[in-house]
Length: 469
Image 1 (cartoon, rainbow, N blue to C red):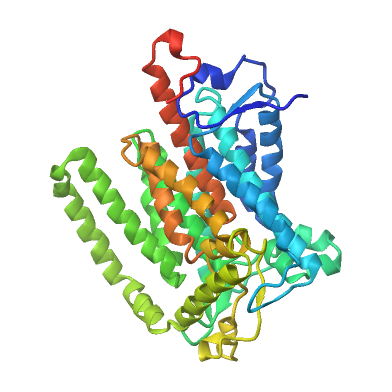
Image 2: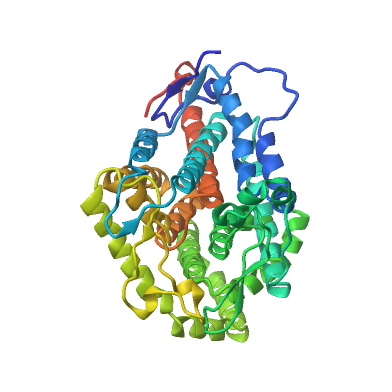
């Protein structure tokens, strides 16, 4: 079967051109997303929470290959450029990097391939959702699926608070060879646990992670699903969900408080400020009349909760700041000295320590050991693994999409812009290569598709087949 014709930079193409000729389908469009998200608790038990995204991308890729034409959003060429750098940087996997030690080639190839598949998967979902018409895959359906994921994440986090030591062997863990299942990298992905037990405050403290692999992943995913939840469960068509929305938010607030997750706390504050700005922009300063009481209730509720104590304790124990800061500096220094353009393809273990108390593990803080170069934030991964060239084209794609939609009044576009803001903040502290980036790409596809349809609707019928902006 011939490859589809890919048209890049098309923010204005008619829905008819995207949908193509109607065919009888056994499966409704978007079923891979439904299976992926609705079955997520099951994938967690099976140990497939990471790999379920890869499996869902396969039928989506087949759908794209089956099309005569595949269109792409403006700025997509920058993303293709980034993928090209990812591939080229693979030639550097066995090259020495300053201040680092080479890992065994098998582990290096494993993690490099894993990340490459993630990049391909998020690319596929962007094109799949963007090339599926509103009639075949309604935006409301996708929003509800992502809102459902907020509920799953919230209750998973609550489970991490009330049963922090609960863990078990997944089905995948039981069937894999022992050598593979006990590999440190693989084990973290396939072993279900409700919380990470860490000594952040100087004593053992659970940090919720279910149904994801790490506590920081839990925080990143919760923040990315939250805007979809608010829009879907508080909107005009929410129905019964509007009644349950506040209790779900209360459930989510418990693990948010006890997560000790400064990145999540900061993003939620920025998200609230963003929401206030958008409400005032859409409804004028008269909206302050009802925003003020809501704000007062939120502040009073926060002050009466354990949050102030947890925040003060967390900021009093910032032993990771020095480590993160020096790791970031050394990451950039190693990249510039060793491979400034395309990086080293993958993470590397740090040679020795930084020579400070923050640079090594202790009995009270085993997590204080120096993490590998390219960790502690997706930005540092891109800098170290794909160099300054890869970093430039990586950021360019998201900044172009941000500029395209930042003034939009469409609710889905405003959600997408919020997620871009969250993403550009969280890449400094979280590894967002995974389900957060997958969610962001879905949001980009939804607002690109909505913008394209709106433009096409304003064109004369004779010009609705193809129109370049």
